[in-house]
Image (tube, rainbow, N blue to C red):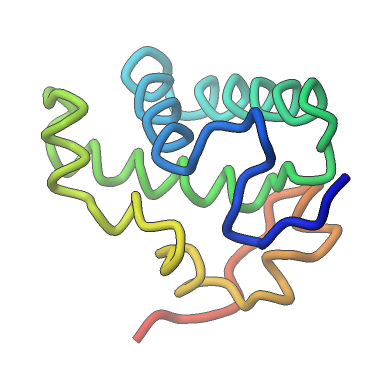
Length: 125
């Protein structure tokens, strides 16, 4: 596989905004626990089908799901995708990911973080 930059998705992968929208869609349809299970399974299958199963990260997936769920709850859930996206631009910014405010690069990119949800090791300022 050709070397890729950390912020780039491999050919065939949808970008970060697509992941957030998929999470939002699951959370509109299912309770948080079921939505998290479904998106985790879907993203793992998608990564494997595209020849890059090592890119899946359970900590990253879970952290985003919980953040998106919190934001949806604060907005009373009844908003369209574009309204949600407009109100939560920080969730859509991959380069300066909000998750990196809670996790060090070492913890977030660890092999354990890829397999299991790890609690944050940073406290945002």
